[in-house]
Picture (tube, rainbow, N blue to C red):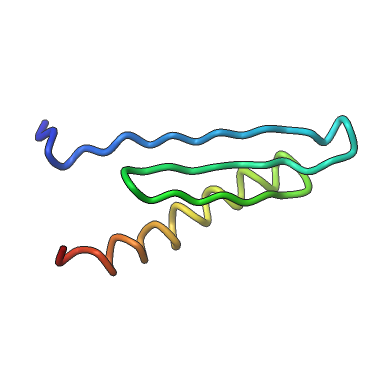
Length: 66
């Protein structure tokens, strides 16, 4: 495996719904970072999937010639 093309993906989820609050999440891949929140844990997983599928892909496309 070529380590030059390998990036570590870190996803942090903090679930505060038991206290009546939101679920906060952060996604980090290389120098790209995305933070947001959702009202449920299931919603957070759906949002994370969406962010990885669309937002990170857009970031990669915008930076592919750097």
